[in-house]
Length: 244
Image (tube, rainbow, N blue to C red; front, side, top):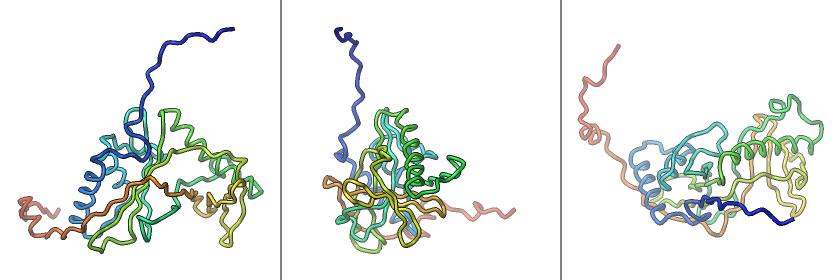
């Protein structure tokens, strides 16, 4: 039997190829970093702030979600955004990404009685989250900002990269306890440590390699804004403070 002829369906194209960020991307991100460094007494460049900056840099919507895999949306595409500290952001070869709290006792009303059984439950929870997001979007990515341990140098290095958010076949991994009592998921094909799961808090961590194709940039640390000058610029008046 011949295959039926179907009408052409328009395929949504991603806003840019994987890790090939728009030309203006570094400038937009860098400007936001410099403003944050100048205006904050204690800089804390954490997840929500990076989500907002990344969304602005690719002209997308910032819509924080409980799942954490679709915090930034542009058309049929979604991103989860994460920040990770690194001693040398430009040289890091791998990162560990906290990827949710996977609690088998909550999700399955029970926890398996073997290490591999628990590991399978943990990956099932992750895969279910990925499936739920991919049902809504054509493609889902994770974008990572590698930042230094501190922001006290004259030039501050950053690295940005992304990868497709995927499911993990349960039968490709085996699980063992480490000396701290946490479960580690090992790739049977390569022997590589890929996952860590902590019973206390149910924290699930995924180990990812930093790709060769990544964006590396530095920003010059700006002087801190003077408090009195800022108050003058905004026209501060003591009447703004009212004791009830």
